[in-house]
Image 1 (cartoon, rainbow, N blue to C red):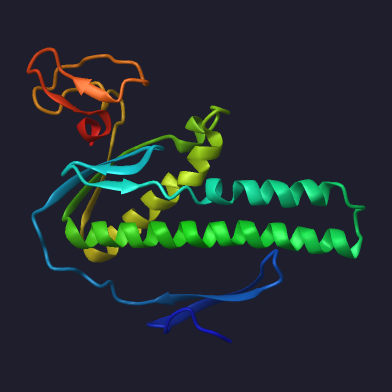
Image 2 (cartoon, one colour):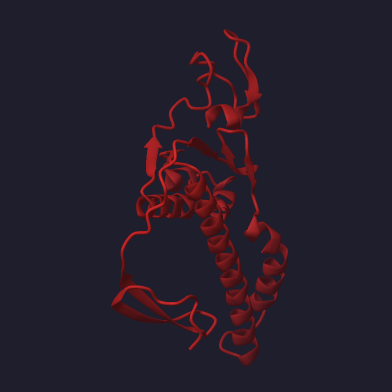
Length: 215
């Protein structure tokens, strides 16, 4: 058995799972003391998106890796070949396993990415604010559903929340209503269509990237 990382704490439960690719995993749930980080006064607001994965209120941007999109052509090619094969044949089972491996690879890369980015943010900021998005409802838009699922905002927020709690950081979800329309300087509300990516405030004349203004 290969350990992902050393076990720390008291083992509470153990679950054995078999993935669709035929690999076996043993998942341990352990009880351990939280690892508090030194207190810091830095604060950050985070606005997630599709063009850029996340825009921070300090003007930093996290690029969107688009793991599914990068594998989509190869995946479609294998799926098309698989659909033409007779069900239950060795060749069909072989292609089904190839498809499962691609999905598994995408999931692993996505999970690793959100773990790393959430870890860096929790290490650097004492107060972390994100929008309380209804991601499942947003995914009802069939034009954006695939990209929204690929971005994995929910997984990112969940990791931020759990890491912040363990480290003693504040994790705050704010109402997302009007965050893209309210000026971050004077708080004037200026409606603008989604296609406009630069915010122009008619009151204080602030000109700022739409996502940065929302963050």
